[in-house]
Image 1 (cartoon, rainbow over the protein chains, first blue to last red):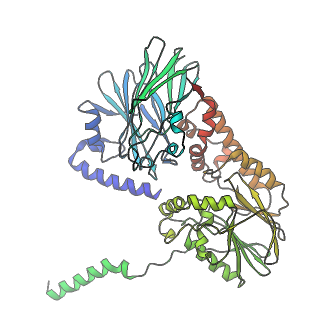
Image 2 (tube, each protein chain N blue to C red):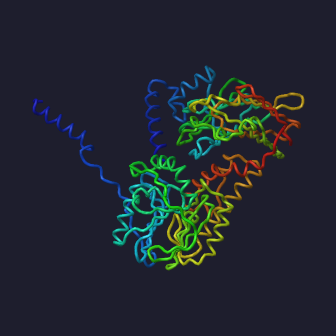
Length: 255
Length: 315
């Protein structure tokens, strides 16, 4: 892809420039000019390692910039308490923050991409270290500044916050897939304020939290998430959440 | 250095710097060479590649038939420039007037050459015309990005005459206009009765993986059965070499059946799109050019339709 080659060349050039003054930028396998700054913003002074055990998956090129599928899997890394996903070159960088709790440190979602960008998962372990993995996804763009598709339908308010779900039970692990009806407006489309789900969690009958997810504007409209659990997930799970306008989400996830 | 030498050097530097702007840019050449495949029937076979700055979007087949009183053109190519060069290529074959330009469907590589035929009747199915009107802008923008300078001055010019299916005589030669769907909402196939050549548009891909941005796979598969029943002697697919039998249909069918099965079984297993992307293609399909790329695109186009019914309302 010509565009991608050009962009990589530009990024490499920029990285070379920055690399001359800041050694830290040179560590980044994705050679992003933003990395030094993003690291400071999201990870502060905590120790950081680029770690191949943090695997991000996605297409090489985003066919639909409004719905770019991304997967995160972390194998062989104990005690992951938080996973932050960012897109370096998106106008809104932070995509989500995941606390696996009883779930595996793995999740799938779909997001909006404004242009080709590194997509990174940053997982924090008990010792405070951040383990970072990522890929580059190329995109024609426009995913963040276009209005949500559902806005053109008259009845989007009737389905707001509705949830479709399914649990696939396996012997080793199980998957919960969730689809929540929500415009997830970024606030970057002219005349449409930011309107998005901020918080989702799965709770059992005793109100114990089995996973918690903070979501931000770049998550796709009517988002679909998959969470994986070791063995069989607890019975009677409820998806509880809210958006930035105070609308509540509450739905029982039947097994 | 003397001041004269400085002046000479300065002149030289300016000359070098300005040279590219002084020499008029040469028009890129698609090298269109009509290939005669039957009496009075010609095809311009595009490359089985994705759009690029190297091929200028010449990845598509266009064709023309020389009827007793004039020429019928089937698809006009990916750009204004292609349309102009196609027109010149036709004029090198026959001095007869252009009577009609058909667009088989609304995808940009099949109609963005319409601009070069603005003084001639252009015709397409009504669904094609409405697709050209609503999506033409985005298509054109996308091709500018992928094919670059070749697209210079190209604008989406939708066909003007709605086509209704049936037998028509154009310039003294009978054509059967056939309404199908599956690759898009309206796909026009044209059977040239006299030669037995079937112009299948993008309902058939041959040695080039099918594309699905507007596809309905089940409808497409049903259409392939109907195409196979037609009395054709030679088939011109939308992409790939002309083929004298049903091999193009069989390959397109095999790919689409596998695609549909892969999407459905993945959705039923609860797989995510990125997991499906990592799946290998069966060996006989993996060797079709661009199958890996088009499979990834198809997952983006179609997976949601297979996934949504697997989820249940939660209250």
